[in-house]
Image (cartoon, rainbow, N blue to C red; front, side, top):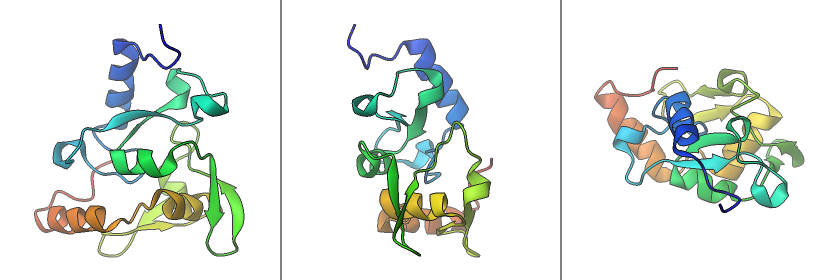
Length: 142
């Protein structure tokens, strides 16, 4: 088996645990243009394993921007900070929604570095949040 093969039962666990949303930007799978993917929080190229504790549900945009990164720059002080880890960290401790719930605000160096590096407020995602908010379908429940 290839090193990055993910058994069906493990895939199902990751999808169920993600509750139908990207674990980074909170984009909802039912409204995504592309399927959500299973991503390695610590990339295989950096020694990460294909185990439940190292896998997250991600939209294609977050997955592409994250790529093999494990750190990003906090734009407030240009210092490196680890990226958000959905297995060991609580989303609401590092992020909050703007008043109109269309933007994700980084509350900590980890949150700000993740918002910046993964571009959690990409134009298309923000536009989708606006449309979904207007129909009462955003933000997604925890």
